[in-house]
Image (cartoon, rainbow, N blue to C red):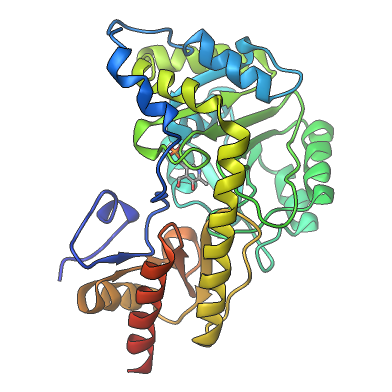
Length: 350
Ligand SMILES: Cc1ncc(COP(=O)(O)O)c(C=O)c1O
């Protein structure tokens, strides 16, 4: 049995009969308008490093108070996070606060930028504001992720407003990772504003376009934008011009597409949550995104057994700073969820 050290082991892996509650890749197709671009698009030269003007203009229409100069189009939210974190390091930043359990890439990105992650523990998925505020004082900034991966929680407006105020009063950077902002079941999400707010988002989850790698930074801070473009000029240059035109086509169907998909995600969320409850697993009901954390002893062994003996993928909670949990993604259809839960039941019975 080959050891499994990170989510990268499972990314892009397809095996017959495998049920994957692993990576957060939606199985639903992107809007069909996206594919209409393909037969007609013949551009092939370098594009603008900051991103094509039509896509940035689309985004400015979705973000009141913005204009197309406030965006940088990136290779997914992943590059947007990397550029934002490195920007803070360039400004002399040493420590970044993150809420635990966290998206697995945060600590590594912070360390790659030469900084140190500092942790504040979520309480049943929610930010403990007193602890957050106290720890933010010793840090240069924080990353907020609402709706969260792997928590599935949406932070309250009160919490988000308080964080916005802390950013202003303490003069701290806040990177707001909003890749799940359109996948919310219970309440709306509050979007942070301010001179030290860097919003990171992508087309991966909203439009089911993970493989096309379109993300972006949105900030009203001109220095953030110009530095991100400068760094990108030395690393990846422009984001795929073809994918940007596919994203441009996707924005034309935003509202209806998102609304229809929420119904599907919500059904899956309910099915998954109830299924895990019936198996007696301790979980909380997600407010958004498409992940559920379940309490489990020895998550590494559970992940290995489930994959090698039952052909089921789950993620080790240790990767997310939750060593007493496993993470399920429910980005798969109900018959597959049903089969996966059956296999899980068989395993747990043993
Ligand atoms: C919280 C969070 N941020 C960022 C990303 C990266 O997204 P992208 O595919 O846009 O790079 C993911 C992907 O799963 C995620 O869950």
